[in-house]
Length: 114
Length: 115
Image (cartoon, rainbow over all chains, first blue to last red):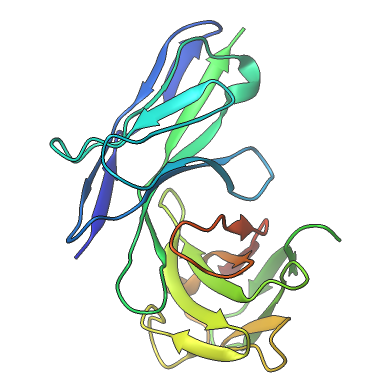
């Protein structure tokens, strides 16, 4: 079945460092891809998405490009801030049937130190 | 409120007890999902409603799990005869229509601990 694999954390960075969180997927067909973020004590929030190959999703300085040839959707940010500390989840949409449910990776904890 | 509301925030149950978890989606949202998130894992799909119709319950782990959304708004996830392996955070999410690329709005979850 469809699945998502993302790099294990925690990832610890200093403020203004460059961030990459790797995500690869396995899917039949052509899923949409998402990054969700969970800040401490809050619910998951959509960070960005891409719906087809070579699309780039971006939001709040974060970017991810849908790479069909490498089945990847790596999350990047050029300069992280302490406020970016959170758990980041990569996900794909299962387009089969009527559900369109999301399949999530295990999450990557990011800790940014001042 | 403006967001998805879940109650209770925390629930402690003795093994064998029945529990009921409530989700208030954003008003007017057609689609409602329940997910289960074990410690250190990503959310896993349990079930999906479109209005009051339960269109997919393929993720429910056993017949002890039951969900309903009788009037197409509030939803309840019920777990009968709870077991220790049911301990997890139960997340509810809603979206306006439910299309593939639709943004999901998540609640903060109910953390269930079965002793």
